[in-house]
Length: 112
Image 1 (cartoon, rainbow, N blue to C red):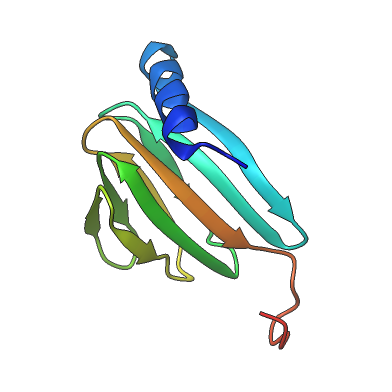
Image 2 (cartoon, rainbow, N blue to C red; image 1 turned 90 degrees about the vertical axis):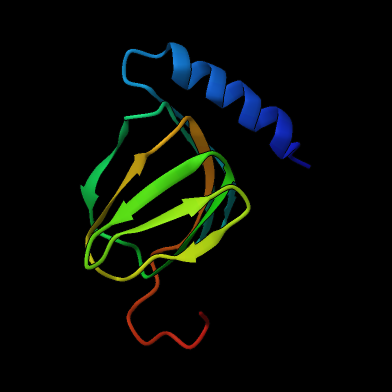
């Protein structure tokens, strides 16, 4: 069992002191399912990248901006489904979020 509050606090502390302003840990790796906790210091982000077949972003604390085909801000407690378009994530304030992805399945696989 993962204590999300504890892990979030630890990674926020690491992100704040990191020269890159971020910290991450893969918490769940079960077949095609991945859940990764990512912490970003305010003003830092993840550059534009491709989206996996299915993904969601749940902000545990703080506020992030997701940009791509359109831009949206996601705050503490909010959950957003990531589009299948290239996108970037930037921390508006010190933030931590849980990124849930499903990867490695062929297109049209009915097991999703």
